[in-house]
Length: 295
Ligand SMILES: Nc1nc2c(c(=O)[nH]1)N[C@H]1C(S)=C(S)[C@@H](COP(=O)(O)OP(=O)(O)OC[C@H]3O[C@@H](n4cnc5c(N)ncnc54)[C@H](O)[C@@H]3O)O[C@H]1N2
Ligand code: MOO
Image (cartoon, rainbow, N blue to C red; front, side):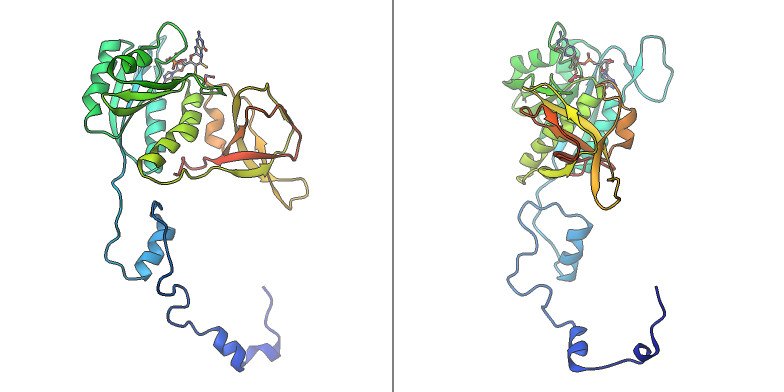
């Protein structure tokens, strides 16, 4: 800030300057201008122009109703007593908040033991009055894939086992005609599965395009990965050494059971199947995840 020179302190008025500060009726939104596209989410930035136009109501679609279940004999509610061999269920609170941030209304189906009948009872009970069921755990590639078996009995398994890491055991199908997303138990795999697949399903349920995809930023360090699968890494935004542009820095310790760095992440970095060597400052695709996972 600098004080105005003396010759600028007095108000000056010439025709051009005065006209520049007159707000004319309709200069922002002319009659017939589309203000929001069908399918837009209404947040503060959308509410403001709708309010300024004096609209009493707008047509909206209902929020998707999503029922959320954790499965696993080892899971207990946090906080609470923790005996040897047990862990707190962190996926359900995490996924619940992610769903709410993406606009869903969430029903908490709690924790089910690794018992196919108990898991099926909760999912079937919720299927008739929800738009989407989401489970976590119980979908490994192996002996305890209860969830895929339940779907095979009560509906149709559209896909299971994706070429992505973390998130390989993600599956999708239906239980009694209710779309059902199977999330892996490993927490970072569940978070990545929601970011990439869960949000896209919610968008489809609301008839809108999925948000937050296709952004690219230069990566701060070189990376490598095998061809043939998508790799998801947590990253944070920082300045390049010159301080003039923004780059994305992969966070350390990206095991799919690790949650520590999820708390620090601004973005997920999406390395596509065919990418094998990514040099420092190459652009990489990012999905914003800071402060939850907005739709
Ligand atoms: N034979 C194979 N086994 C496994 C494979 C494979 O390809 N072949 N893939 C592994 C991968 S990758 C994943 S991911 C897991 C997924 O298995 P589940 O979905 O059944 O997950 P769990 O075994 O139940 O749990 C894995 C891990 O995560 C912990 N967990 C589970 N639920 C929660 C929760 N709600 N909150 C916090 N932590 C949770 C659980 O205790 C385990 O430590 O399969 C591999 N196996
Ligand atoms: O997908 Mo498992 O997805 O690596 O933890």
